[in-house]
Length: 326
Image 1 (cartoon, rainbow, N blue to C red):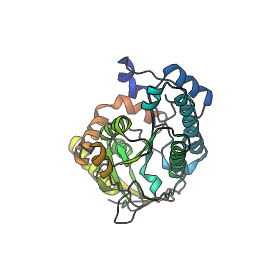
Image 2: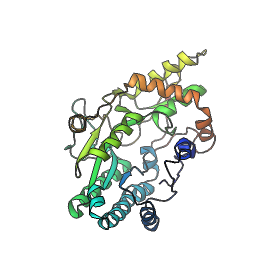
Image 3: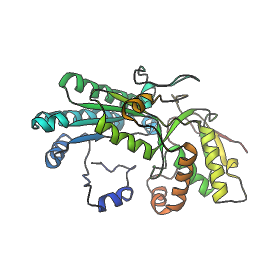
Image 4: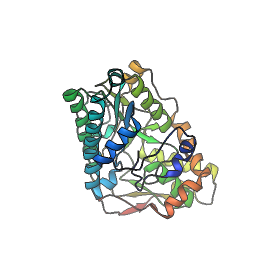
C-alpha cells in the first residue's frame, strides 16, 4: 500500500508488480475507511509499516504533513490492525505481527563517543524525528495496552538504488554527473552510520519472522562516515568513471547548516546480531560503488524525477548562503 506521493515511483517496483507476487493498493495511511477495506480484502498475516514522510528538510519547511502521516497515520494503522487482529481465529491471531519501522533520529544527537542502544532515551530535534518518536510511543502503547503483537526497529541512514534524489547520496551523485555544485551543510563534519538498503531489507524480513513481540531492534551499518567524507568518496568514484577537465571535489560548496542538525548518529546493532543472527554484509566501500554505478546505468529512472518532481533545489528553513571551496 502506498499513497504514491512525490517520492514514490511505480517504475521502482515495476519488476515486483509484474511478477504476480505483489499487489499495489494506492491509499492514504491516514484514511480509516481505506485501511479497513484493505485489511479485509487482503487478510494479512503480518504488517510492515514503513509509510512515512521522511525528509528532515521538508519537515522544517512544512511539518503538518509529517504530523498527519507519521503520527495520525500510525494511529490509524494500529487501530485498524488491532480490530482486524482481535477478530482472527486463534492460530492466526497468535502468529500475527505488526512491524513498525522507524529511525535512529528519535534518539537525538550523539557526541564523539557512544552508540544508540535500544534503551537510549528519546530526544528528537527535528519535526520529522519528533513525529517518528511519537509514532514509536504509539506502537509501544498498543502493545502494552491491547496486547497487539508489535515489533519496532530503528535504523541508521539507508542508501542504495532507487533512492529519491533529495537525499544526500543520490543528490551528490546526480549533481556530480551534471557538473553542478555539491552543497554540503556546515563544515560537513556531521557523522552518519550508513546502511545499504539490501542489508536493511534482510533485517526487516528477519524481524517480522523471528522477532519477539514487544521488542525493539536497532539496525545499523557499522559504517560511520562524516558527510564531507561521503561526498568526497562520491566525487572520486565519478572522476574514475566519468573523467573530465574539472575534478568533482572542486564542486563542493559549503552552505548554511540547517536548523537542529544533529551532529552524530551511530547504532549499536549487537542485539539483532545476538538474538536474530543479523549483521550487515555490504561494506560502505562496496555499497557506495554499487550505488554510483546504479545511477550511472539507470538514467531512465532518475532523469524524469529531476525534470519534474525534484530538480535538486535547497530545502529547509536556513537561508542558502554559500562559499565555494576549490
